[in-house]
Length: 219
Image 1 (tube, rainbow, N blue to C red):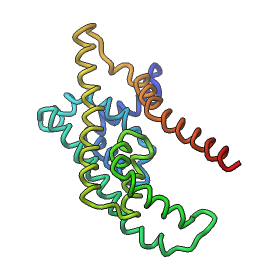
Image 2: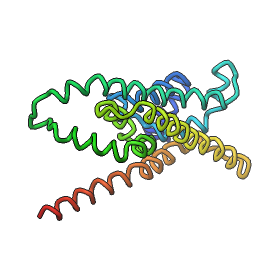
Image 3: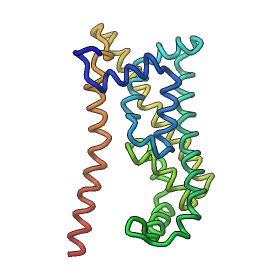
């Protein structure tokens, strides 16, 4: 391991250089619909993939980089479909389950009402929020969100999420190279930390202050 590089940079570079496109697709697929995918660095990995997209395209039959972009979008769409399917299958069992200290049926009822009112924006915006992008499609399946509506916002959200992350990496790398003959590939660690902070802090802020508001309203 290069002593000058942090763990995050080494991990992402390993995925890009040794796992390549196939690991990238697997990570995006898992993070958008499988329980085990919630800890993957989706946003930062997509940004890094945009920086390395020309290399990925050369490894995959030397196609145009736009093909890689489409393939990653499809992985995101399919991940959400699997998540929805899993939730749909698990839903009836959960509704029939008795309440325990870990599980309360009232939370399912609340989730169903929430998705009836905000399901469209939830599926779309969850793509841009770590953790939520993994569980949003599963919950949508559990509460039986309308399939065509789910699919529309799944597709639109996937296109916007993947293109914004990867194209930002691609064009920023090209611009920095053109202006200063300088590569962002040596600073993936810092970029990753910045992206993680930008995407997670608003979620933590909302959760923290929402909890505070609930406590003050009940007191």
